[in-house]
Amino acid sequence: MTLFRNVALAVIATGFGLVSAADPALIKMIPPDATFVAGFHADQIKSSRFGQYLLDQMKEEEAKLAKFISATGFDPRRDLTEVVFASADSERRGKVLMLVKGRFDAQRIRSFAQSEGANKIVYQGVDILTGGKPESHGWLALLDAATAVAGDIDYVKGAIDRGRQSAAALDPKTANRITELGTRYDAWMLTAGAGRLASGLRHKQIEGMRGAMLEGMQSVVGGVRFGANIELMAEAEMRTEKDASALVDVVKFLSSMVELNRDKDAKAAEAAELLSRLDLKATGNQLRMTLTVPEDALERMVKPASHRKRNAPVI
Image (cartoon, rainbow, N blue to C red; front, side, top):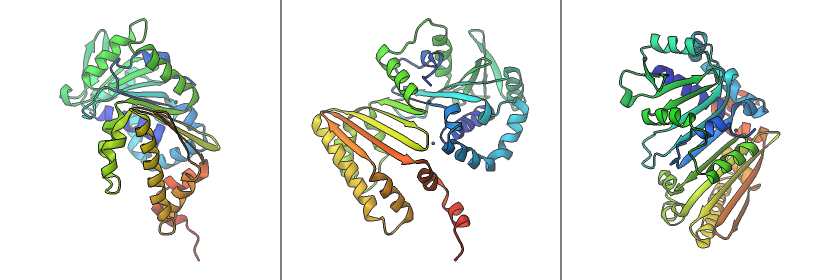
């Protein structure tokens, strides 16, 4: 569905190019069995220097967004305020619920979607926009002028139902943790059963270590706070103290691999410099990593190589 794809890509680009406390109305709609939750405060990120840098990179995409913005009145660079992603998809099939706070002209968005071939159905009195094949297309529901939900069929219906309840369906511990992360960080995430994330790693140097240590993660939380210095934090709860110590060794090994390539590659040199600032500690079965990165250093790292070459001094 063109509408859902445009909204999703624009939201992700604005927030991460990659959240004040997470909105209680969004937390209330998170599935109670969610194993992965992440979010970001678009307003706070956009106001930072790095956020402005990311928005500058979007100028090349303005032509693609122009028709959507003109027709719907929704410009994610201006109207997006907060986004939360949630998934209970343990089999990694890409099912994600997206909960959005912003400023929406529901009538214009519906008219544009239907002009692009979207269908409209009504669920619990809420208009939901979807493609011709609901089982294989994203759903988008505008709950009011400030709230939208999008994603898989069951996720959207569930979010609508939970939004009408008096309290969050999440257990209080998880809901409080999300509030804590959202208050402290501009972007954040938490996940349970994080071992499945390790299956995406295929580097030959760490393949043998992957199962024994990364799959020992019981849960992971992380956060990023933007400013002149960008603060990054990650915490992992491991099965045992031995697993926590082993993961420290893995991170140190990877850092040493980057250091070995410092003189061979400019990006490796920059990465090595940043990793030298990494504070890594294991206490019992808890692992905590913190890193403070100067904003301009991060900009240099994410800047495309072609852009670097164009701006390199001529000798």
